[in-house]
Amino acid sequence: MLDYDGDTHVYLQIADILRRRVATLSSGHPVPSEAEIQQEFGVARTTARRAVHVLREEGLIYTVHGEGSFVGPPAGAPRKQRKVPLYQQIAADVADQIKAGEFLPRRPIPGETALVKQYDVARETVRRAMALLREQGWIYTVAQRGSYVSPKDSWPAG
Image (spheres, one colour):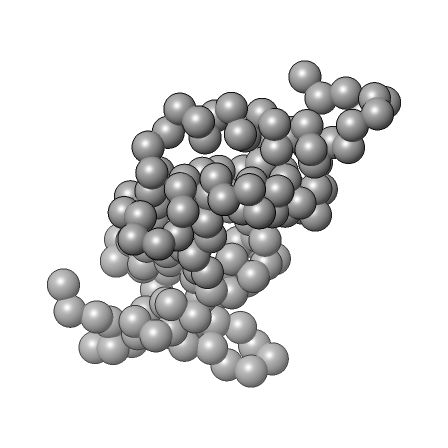
């Protein structure tokens, strides 16, 4: 599909492929994230970022910080809700395991490295999930020791 030895940069080839896909989508439709582009085409993050940048410069897509990139011009375009962010999915999964008794109060939950491997995500994604779980009251963190399940009376209602 991609010609790595040709005279056209790989990011421009990816931008061409994405340009054809975007042409079939309605305004406000989410476009693949840099991570999704990276995985699909087997390229580095910077290559994916450059491909997205080309389409943004052409005015075919726009990016909303923290939400992703969408088809169309940024002014007044409707945005379809992207799927639940990965860190929120991980936090919900860990919270479900706590509720199910798989992790007991005042006992450790798996560390960052284990969760990175389990979910096959970046460390920052796991950190955001952990921060959300702390914020919601599911876990607490002890410096140099790790994160532990909060006592039941600290769990969020519901």
